Image 1 (cartoon, one colour):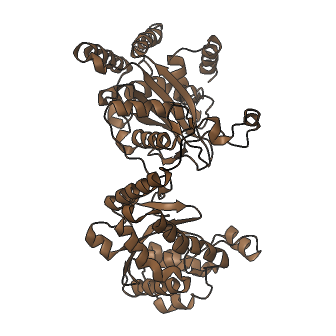
Image 2 (cartoon, one colour):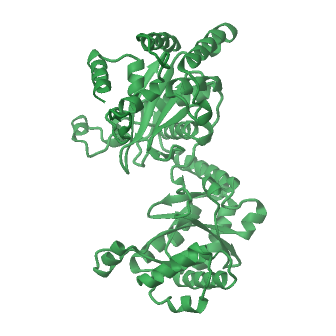
Image 3 (cartoon, rainbow, N blue to C red):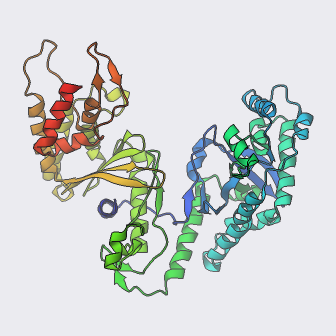
Length: 504
């Protein structure tokens, strides 16, 4: 993926597409859903004056400085009280679903007996509410200080004591219940209802489950300044300050070698950027893991196996974030499966080349179902011919195809990559259509030419003799198999394709 992204970053630079990289430790929060809400705590004069749900569409604006061990101003909190009684759990669930119908606030107060803020949680609390704010404040030296976050850190200072926060949140939650405002958020904040498995683990001493609630800190002062933490401006400006501070800290360190692309390189131990893709999964840029023994014979471990400078790391991360964003969907990438996406870009980036995404991937929405491969192939050939005459300097020299797949929780890998010239695509499109038309006459007419991106879907279908599918879960062929056929495959792969079609 690193080499593909370097090509992309170079093409974006040539096209004048500017992207600001995100600071490595300033990352997006998880998606907000009904089952995984995010609560906004609004501060004023050392008190929490409002607690509310953050709308899902605001999630893309919110970032956190830190990691899973601790972060700020977005972080994970735990509900105040632990509820193991099944009848009580059922009543809490009903109140959430029915918006508090038949709510008995006094009864709920009697359930607040078992504190959910365990010793294990309080250790994590110190990271979120004390260590991380102080670390962030220290990172932002005087000339790069971003005052809104400094003010938010100062506003939060009284709550470094967990007892103070616990009491404040309980008061706020019961006020919300008594006023019957945002009952679901109040109940989520008050009570943690473990599953049966979690309850048994806790009671047997096998684990200390306390659940988690996503929260983001804010203040009325920041909102009046136009810097609310759930708005776009706050994250953008804090990121700028963090990047500037990082450059200042690195300025005095002398480069000793060149990286894989010839840029000045200082040895780094920090992880490479991790990007949240609009396709629904994360991708970490990474070189070889130190657990692979083969690298030890060469004396270059992990980052040193394929050194990438800090500037290039940021550039590659920004390039992936740009091309994988929601705005580029069906232009430069398409979803090819759960945890998988196909990316297509050229040496000269142009929105008109989205015809390639449609041509290689097949129809991408209901209104495109009648779209035919022949028409898209013609559109691409005409675009290429017109560009060569009217604007030869912007004729793409190459077009890159690559597929990213989420292999497991920790790894995302490039499972297919191919670099083609535009002329090769035109030539192979003609061969593809000729092969598809090499058929006898059928009583129902001429079959449509299949899109390369739909070949795997066709091959993975197993049919009964009555014309119904045996299963739609059969996945012997990868989603990019059609691209391999399109760009030429060994004879044995072609024979395997025919055998599969006959068998299925």
